[in-house]
Image 1: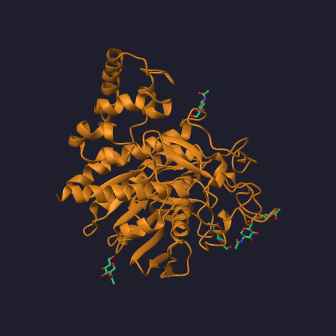
Image 2: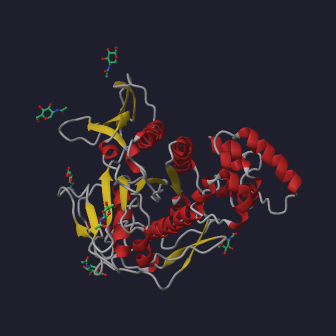
Image 3: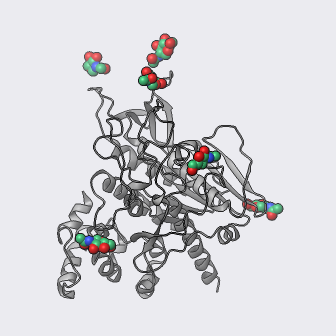
Amino acid sequence: MKLHSVDLPFGKNQNLKNTSKVVLLVGLAILLTTVPLYYPLLTYPVLITRSLSRSSLSFLPPSSSYDVLKEESIRVTVTKKCDIFTGEWIPNPGAPYYTNTTCWAIHEHQNCMKYGRPDTDFMKWRWKPNDCELPIFDPSQFLELVRGKSLAFVGDSVARNQMQSLICLLSRVEYPEDVSYSTNEQSTRWEYNNYNFTIENFWSPYLVKVSEADPNGSTQFNLYLDEFDDWTTKIDEFNYVIISAGHWFFRPSMFYENSQLVGCHYCLDKNISDLGFYYSYRKAFRTAFRAINSLKNFKGITFLRTFAPSHFENGLWNEGGNCVRRRPFTGNETHLDGRDLELYTTQLEEFKVAERESVKKGLKFRLLDTTRATLMRPDGHPSQYGHRPGENVTMYNDCVHWCLPGPIDTWNDFLLEMLKMEQKESSQGSL
Ligand SMILES: *[C@@H]1O[C@H](CO)[C@@H](O)[C@H](O)[C@H]1NC(C)=O
Ligand SMILES: *[C@@H]1O[C@H](CO)[C@@H](O)[C@H](O)[C@H]1NC(C)=O
Ligand SMILES: *[C@@H]1O[C@H](CO)[C@@H](O)[C@H](O)[C@H]1NC(C)=O
Ligand SMILES: *[C@@H]1O[C@H](CO)[C@@H](O)[C@H](O)[C@H]1NC(C)=O
Ligand SMILES: *[C@@H]1O[C@H](CO)[C@@H](O)[C@H](O)[C@H]1NC(C)=O
Ligand SMILES: *[C@@H]1O[C@H](CO)[C@@H](O)[C@H](O)[C@H]1NC(C)=O
């Protein structure tokens, strides 16, 4: 809805390249008065000019998290900065950098080659930001950067998917030791002994406290939208925390605030108001960020890994929908809209609020803005190759998770690039 008000002054896909500056500035004035609250970054004309000259996708805020850093310095340095999250997928014959025989960390349901996926082209692309290069993941460099540090993934199975990609990418240098506290695969802890680097994942698909609505194990959850989940008591020690959430919010669920039932999503009880999943999604991020900003001992950097769109076509996930494309989209073949756009915008709004709050506390929030690159990869999902043929599984065609190796590896290219930026920032800061 907010984004539409951004769209209106210009209209979709309007080419602004040849628009005179005057017209552009008028447009900007409208834009700034329409949405000043949402994206403070939009007050930087250089950024606007740069991003408006691209597709309608770019009506989203310029998203390189480094741009968010020091608002004062942006005016001066912005032209040199590159938004690594806006670009295209280009062929990369050198990929992949691991296989299911060199890496044991690939989750069964993402081991697409094991289950007979016939094509391999989906592994052979890399992300090319429009204005710079995004280097391919360098495992030695990554491990040097994180020596003595620790990284937490908080979220659902897509968060775990990224963690396993990272472990596989690093496996060319070192395999980690399993130092998990339990045998529950939903929460694992890994130690890189030669680097004293720790990775842990915290299962929290809703980011907030939940209970099962039916104690006999239904799929319906009660979400306590203003209550902190367990992970918030365990991340104090971490240097980096990557937060994400997504597809669980589409399930039927009951919403609680102040311990009172306030509504639900798709509970089909006429006496309870259906507030929809945008409501719970917003509140969940708000609460998760509030938790982080309230931690006494946490000194780490929080990354929001933005929503990862699924790619079911010709039906919903439970109605025979599937993802059978074999090539990435180009930027002009797709754009973020509908539900994906709304979820993404919701996250960003909550992120901006939390980020402002975090600055007061000396904490850092960064945007791992994978949404657009991910939207352009309908070819990277397991589809029917996440299990044995004919096997009775809940989601027969998986168009949510990502084959490994595959496009999700690029999320870790982004991560490494961001960690390098952080290091540069801190070394410049100490001059
Ligand atoms: C790896 O993939 C191959 C097909 O490329 C498959 O035959 C094999 O079973 C898989 N191995 C493991 C350990 O997953
Ligand atoms: C490993 O890193 C932790 C911090 O994450 C630090 O407290 C500890 O002293 C380090 N251990 C070694 C052997 O360097
Ligand atoms: C859970 O299962 C028990 C025993 O099968 C049954 O008595 C009870 O009604 C069930 N609870 C719900 C909420 O369905
Ligand atoms: C809805 O509320 C009405 C009036 O309070 C009550 O009679 C009815 O049983 C309720 N229905 C459900 C499904 O709880
Ligand atoms: C879409 O983008 C691709 C790659 O950037 C380009 O090759 C192609 O010509 C574009 N197509 C249209 C219709 O603009
Ligand atoms: C598939 O599994 C579900 C639950 O495990 C069961 O209810 C259903 O009957 C199974 N379907 C087939 C075709 O076996």
